[in-house]
View 1 (cartoon, rainbow, N blue to C red):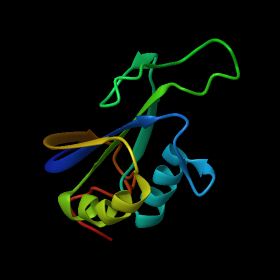
View 2: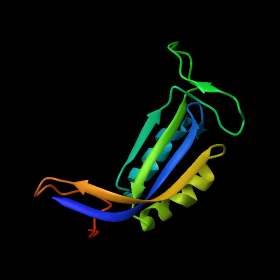
View 3: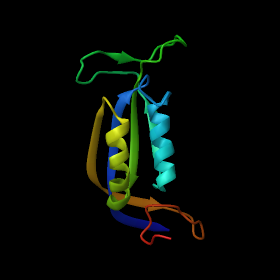
Amino acid sequence: MREQFEAKMLRIHLGESDKWHGRPLHEAIVAKCQELGLAGATVYRGIEGYGRSTRIHHASHWKFSKDAPIMLSIIDREEQISRLLPYLDTMVEEGLIVMSQVEVIRFSRPGHQVKGASSERE
């Protein structure tokens, strides 16, 4: 089955060492997305990057290095993304959030129920 619709995509850029109540921030954001019923969230760990501070963040082969850049990608309908934004306002102390309008083409098997971002909400 093929479904096509307009949606919003959030890309959240932060550091691996960023925390929310003692927990890695990216984990807390993914948990909040799941709690709010968003269609999905993916976390990417970068090799190297820098932001406004111009301090270079990099992944290292040393286990004690926890300074890699992190990017979360979240895609869902605008009303669902709007529910998440107030939480991000309090959770993200330093970072960059980019929001863009996207065209989604989703493929699924017949009879396979897809949660979130569907044309008909349950």
